[in-house]
Image (tube, rainbow, N blue to C red):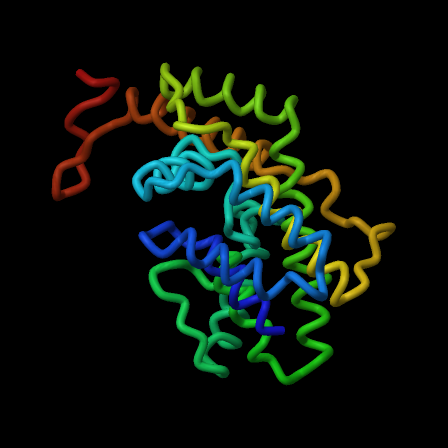
Length: 238
């Protein structure tokens, strides 16, 4: 299970050791996971070597005008209350085994991958992979389809008026997701017929979220302002 520690580092924000971390992950996969090794090797070949360009690519992929989110709960449930329960339970599991989540949320993919080797309860391990991690990784990969990329670009252009152009194609990270999914499938024999989250998408959650935000802005432009006694003093910007 230590190979999950190695690959987890590739989902962290890149620093000067990022390319070395890829080499360590390649070494961990070489003999037992040849298909995953090939995907990861392709990932490395396509990446820029400068740290700042790696950081720009990561930011555009997962943070600002993102292709997808690395937060598993959000990818599966959006901001639904179900995610709150998942975050609470995951926090407890991380603490129980001393898994430091750093500055990220407990459902961040890198944190969950680092949790896997530390879990002693096999049933919990299987559930975590088959009910959360694997379905989320599948959905993350779907976000790289041409139609989804076009939809997100249109949404971001409408919302922000301009698009961030990364130094290299965003699809590079799809190789990393594929390598991880191959690992999960090899180790846990994923059942692909049962896909309860097949209809969910990061784009769908994002679109709804931005529409709500847009509605709030519109509503606020014509809302009353109150003084400390609760008396309305302005309305509709007047």
